[in-house]
Image (cartoon, rainbow, N blue to C red; front, side):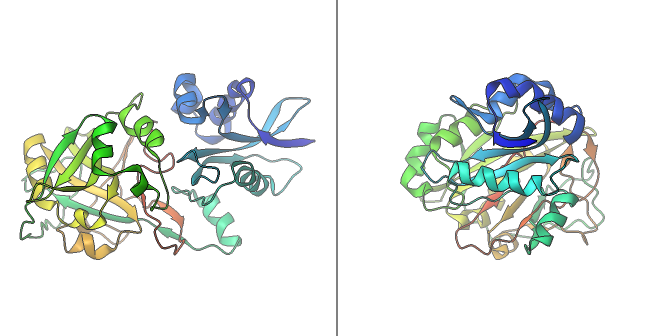
Length: 330
């Protein structure tokens, strides 16, 4: 008989084996216990939920949780959701529902849905959509990462904003008080932000404050470099604060691309009005785009990639490629 419960420390080796055999063979969560614990262990709790035969200790299903704040009703993202054949045909749904009950989640939104997950949510009456994907090219002659058939770099009037590096979470708090973070869905507290971006065990993130011409700052941008085929690009991973600032940074991004030798800057998001990007110097990339702006680098895949999620139509929900477990080492 399968028992559904929250995992404990003693379950971690079995979960890692399950990931390697049934989820994504060879992935870092299956091979690196330290990284697994960084991702899923919060003090004395393991943020994984499993369906397990307690007699044989065989795991038949799992779902992980990214918990964004320490409130009594936190916002969360489900991730690493996988089940195998068992006597329970709805084990996956039961795992997900159990996770939400145990966490007392206010909202749960994941992203990066597989075809299987899309089918499940569609059968449940949910509408699955792709995140908006926008990019801005550097003005160079040879693109090694991107495939550029039509080189379009929209002209900008120049808002005069510039980017300044942030090196500690206390600097970010001076720009965006924690009380402002609570206004957002998904609501992330500084405990999460510090661990996720300032203390990541593998990736280096650049954290920038967006500074206006009058030397004020109302938002923070998180970026990360990727390299392939001898080229380098800049990915926007997350953003906090005033959304409109995303439409006022093209001039600053152009300078950054020139200084660091990036081919392009791109961003995946949900809940940001597309007019902000399109009036701010970005170009849209979707399944019909003739230019290829890759998202997979380990291994490198020269394709346009859709990141899918449930269309929530929930006022205040904003998601970026850094949410859930999307921006994760392979």
